[in-house]
Image 1 (cartoon, rainbow, N blue to C red):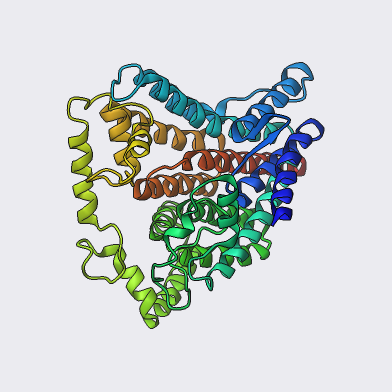
Image 2: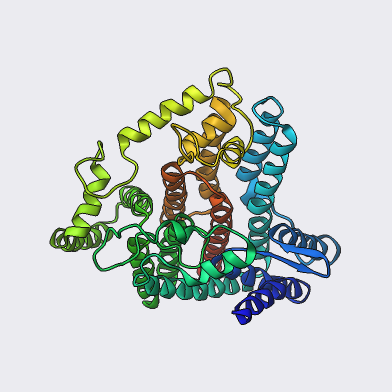
Length: 446
């Protein structure tokens, strides 16, 4: 399998080389890499080729082209909510004593760089050169198609994932597929209980699939190209077989919000027809019927689908409140939940792996942190309205934010905010350029 490692290395190294030749193409390759390869840690002449190195290099090249070559104008609008979130939490970390501040700062630095740098670059490139929108689109589409088809293949592998298993072994990482080999699938037509495709974890894969649904829907609405329905179908089926119920629940919430806010008769009628057809399919299949029944199973006893029940979540919420006694306002420190699990392999006795953004925020940054996160989401909704003019675009981006929030509240945030920031910045840039084009066309027609 040496050829696979060689191919992955060339893929990673090409991002570095292309950054000096064509920054837009380099970013597109990086997006594809993030979806298709779960790890990035090589050595080149003693220097580590890692996520942080690539992020720093791309930022340096971008700033050089912006400040020295004057090719791009710096625009901070899209990352303003993220800057508010991260710097507010950084200041708050100065008043916490649950862990050493040096560890807090390192956690903050890594999360900040992974979240803000690439999203900042994508947004700024989109303001000046629309080619980045095309490069990003094709890099994203091709990688999702490859990963989605591989996900279909994994249905018949009984939980095994040869690709991630080999890469995990090579890079000395834990392969999450090992946790699901012995588990039974919730669906009779799939042998795998969880599928992570080409990514590090099934929950990361399911989140990317949720983002893909909104992204392909936006592409279809702007182009009316029916090929996007095929891609939406591929993505939707992969969400179903991924084994992550939270993805389905988050999508339902996001789509429901969009339909309520947009209120177009034809769209509502079409949605009702699709819902009716899906309901018939679900009722006719015991596996699907049992799966969807688990969403309303408060006790966790009425459905045979096992997982976190609402009752269990409420107990964990109380556990989070109990955990921060004496630290209610500032919490126990930025990244404390990650720090705790790193020194307690069995997890927390009540909160387990802190599988909710709500639990993470309470433990890490207390009630002040919870307030900061609420403001962060409100700033995102406001930003949608500041940049976009058409209601359909605003409500689609609102739904995108809701899907991320609902998903993270259901599973926790294990680096998900970095993917959210990248897709959010791209979609805002894509919709903004489309409305500028429409305004220009309308003006020239007068």
